[in-house]
Structures are given as structure tokens and as C-alpha cells.
Amino acid sequence: MTLRLFGAGGAFSRRYGTTCSMVTLRSGQRWLIDCGRQAPDQLHAAGFVWHDITGQIVTHVHGDHVYGMEDFAFIRYFESRGADLAGMLGGAMPRLIAHNAVRAEVWETLAPSLRYLNDGRGNCKAGTLEHFFEVIAAAGCEPPRHNPWAHAERFVTDDLDLVARETLHVPGKPSCSLEIRIDDDPRSERVAWWSGDCTVDSQMLKELEPRTSIFFHDCTFVDYPGQVHGFFEKLELLPERVRHKMVLMHHEDNLDQNRERVEAAGFRVAMPGQVYDLVSGQRLS
Image (tube, one colour):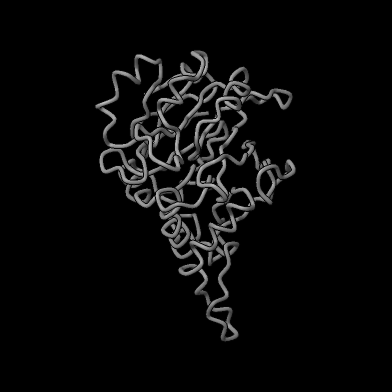
């Protein structure tokens, strides 16, 4: 199981690209984690097309995480590629995994484009999310804690097994981290962890560490009022055992000004094009 970073920068990065990564499973299935506005060009530059992608995982709805999904939906629905038929012709649709509260906001964002499908009876706004994606239902959930929606939802499809757990990003906004199961043994609880976007929850990270091979955490070096990301000075206070498993992503373009301090604390830094082995936690390229 591997994770490849197409974009590793924050929302306004011009050097490192907006958020989109690809998890390749043992079966060969490829799943995207988020799909920012630059994702269509990022995949093209890396030699991939939308028909190579099995499914899409969404952590939350901000443009640098979902604005590439319109391209994904339209290409797969209207275009065939070799033996892969377009969705409108009965071809396989890409799958979609998102916490139920996040999924509602996905449709709010995409609906102004995707709803314009004719149902043949004069209704020109018949399109739904299910016309473009095979929406995977949660296999289980944890009851609400801080918000009206479920605190966590588990999703299982073929050899992908993950938990989308609510985290604090923008207060009141649905946003989830991901716990991706990495072992074949169903009794194992080992995971690779992906933050999405969130503030630093040191207690959760310390509790997860014994069963986590690698952490990918968003990072900012700017401490601004109403912080919504992983402020580096708080990440820096994490125990060494957590820091040494952590890859900092979603960083700003001022990264080089802080790199010496980052590496001195034992963190690794995500860069576009890097590939990580999710089982060992080691970088492959």
C-alpha cells in the first residue's frame, strides 16, 4: 500500500500545488484523497487519467480539496476510454467515500454544475451525486460528540477499510481525518493517518501513535487568530515518537525559511511526487 502526493501545499500555495494524493491498494485500485483545483493538471502531469482512478475520498469541502471533482465527474460520465465506457453508457462510475455530513457539502458545491441532466420528461435538473459517483455508504458509525453528525464513520469497499473521524478545522464545519487500515489481518488495528485539515489534537495523536505507521499532518508556520490548521509550534511539542512518524504537508510557500527547524525536530516534509509505503511508514521515492 502506497501513498503518492500530487500536491503538497496549502490552499494558496503556488510552489507546491493544492491537495491531492493517491493511495494504491494491494489489489491495484487507486483512490484519491481530496481533489483540489489543480488536481486535473497534477494527474495529467504524472501520467494518469481519470479512468485510472477507482474512487475519491473527501475529507472536507474547501476549494483546494474538492474543486477538481467537477472535472473528474464530467470526464468519467461523458467520455469513454478504450474498454472503459462512459458512465452515461453504463460504464463503471468512480466510487465516493465521504462522511455523511461532508458528503452533503460536496453536493452543495458540485450541484450547480452536475444537476443539469435531462430526465427525458422535461426536467433539466435531474442530476444527483449518484449519477456521477457510486456513493459508498458507511458500514458503521460512532455517536455524535461535538456536533449533530456522527463523530466517526467507517467505510469498507473491497480492500479499502478506513474511518473518517471528525476533527476541528473551521468551527462548526464538517471535516474529517482518515484512519486507513494497512494490514490484511482483520484483527489488526494498525493504520496510516491523514489529517485532512485540522488543528493539533495532541491527545488524539499520542493515543493513535502505538498503532499508526505514519502520520500526514497539515502544517502552518503562521499563528493567526482563529487557527484552523496544524500550527508548527504545537506540532513541535508532540512527543518524539509521534514527530518521527510524521510527514508535514499542506504547508505554505515559506517552507524553506523554516526547514532547518522542521528537520531538527525530526519531522519529514511532503513534496509533490513523493511516494510513501503506508505499511512501513518509509518514503520510497
